[in-house]
Image (cartoon, rainbow, N blue to C red; front, side, top):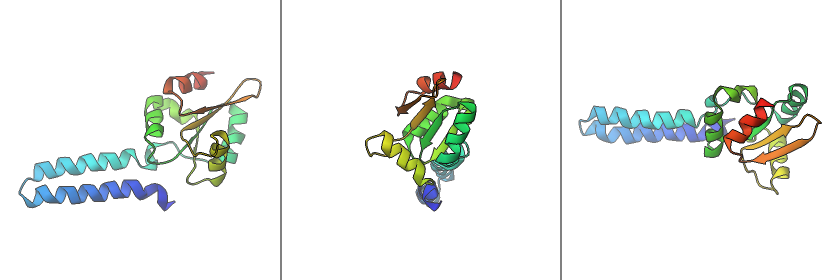
Length: 148
């Protein structure tokens, strides 16, 4: 659990250190701007930006019941962030699995990507029960899958 907060915490601490220089030189405005930039980066990389994660088993159970896609992600992944931001409110209609918190989810991602933990990996269930796996898909493709 602490691993997901490592990057946001480091960004916040680096921001505080970076803001200390302008503050000591008598430039509080610059210090505030620097701190706010680092805090924004920390917020964007925090798990709070993503919908609540479930484990892979629960995500698969829910996906079979409602047909919604499953997104495997990890904190700090810029491609996951891009997908999340481009999906907008639609992201909350998907099942998100944090592979750093769920070893079974990480195993599913490795199985789908030749042993690599490449994220985001999206599993879409078809109308006939077939599964298709999309690795680092364009957000428009995921939106289409969500509309089905």
